[in-house]
Length: 286
Image (cartoon, rainbow, N blue to C red; front, side, top):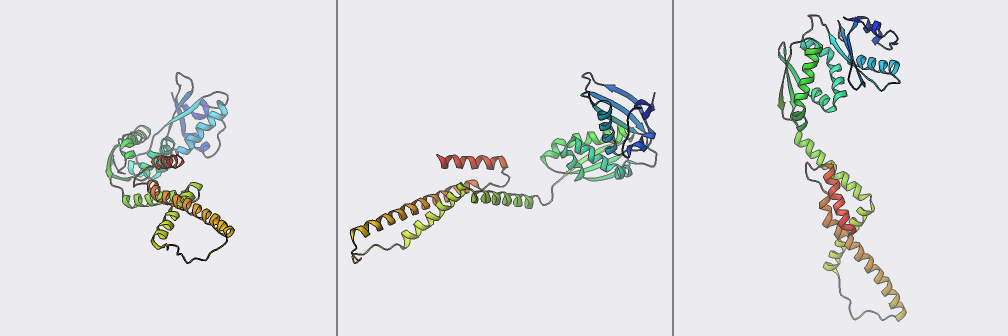
């Protein structure tokens, strides 16, 4: 036997836009699971109700009536719609509710439905064209099940949902942009770290070493004779400069040899990039 919602929950203070809608809502059944942590409330209405009001009503019941009990409230609604509604025109007005419900269930399902091309080749047949992807193939049946449950069990339509996959447009361009963006971010990180500075100096050292080998001139015997103290001072300065140049060249050479290992190939995941970067750091420290 169905009763008015306010008769079943007389102590509930209704807030927001749900108060007026509850005048046409009746409770057909109330049940609780064996663990006593989930309360199901089955309601019927002669007009459709936005899903945000259903979620709002669930929260108000939990906070006002079961605040001291670890109990979750689930409202299962059913609509008795007039004959003016068909699956196609009902989707136009109820689409935001479907998207909200899918978002609370799974972000992936929400994205699949929001990007799908929806047509009605027949009155009671919905045709979904989904963007082909791994997620779409894995969650296709789940999305169809939820849509059929909404249209058939909740709204009373006799609807069949069919799906079709289409290739994503501009996939190669997006992949290229993603690859370039990842490479640029890796270079930026390397350039602003001590590790990257050492690699850059190694590359510069290697270039200077090649230039010296190509254009260096041998010392002649006609060089002026200087005092031993001056020669020792110049030797120390020259020795320090040579050591600095050798260190700089080694670090630059290391950059040239290892830099390619940090450039991810197309399709490489962030975890693989991080793993390759860690491997290079270990070899460098070793």
